[in-house]
Image 1: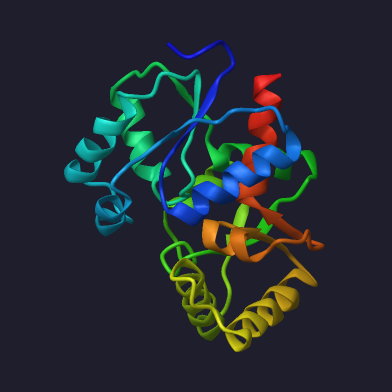
Image 2: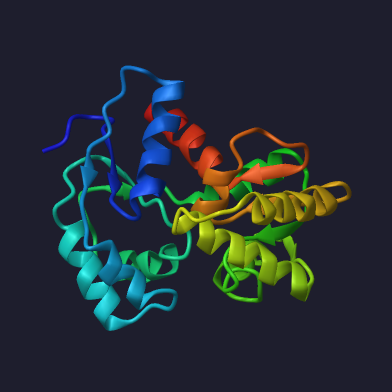
Length: 216
């Protein structure tokens, strides 16, 4: 069994897992975070919507986790995880990235945000519904901007981002964050945004920070 206060990652994309591990080590050099590997390609092919096939595949990995807390470095998959955890109890407690960002928003008295993420995330659905149930109003980038953001996100995932695509993305991000709080709700966008920006809240970095607070 895992030691008291232990935390693990469920393996998703290689780059998203590495981002989480790097962020943990930046904050706490002595921390050890075991990673439970998965067939991420198989999981990714079943996203974004919950399905019985996806639940069965995830359960195969979840029952192996022995630590006290689990982080899953993929935002969209938490919709399915919520359904699984409502029906079955595991040894671990899931540290939910959206719940943690809600706490941050309420601390800062922020009641309206713009979502940047996958094309699926940048429309009414799981992430916006979650936030709006917590009285956080969600808006989205304009149609053409959504397309550019999603193209850039996919390029980062494939490690094929170009200078032109990168510049286009950051122009859009700077434009929206001038007057509104932007939430980065995609691990690929968190990978791209290495520096803290005004009015930009990163789900991944907040997820890591609040996870360390849970362990204290």
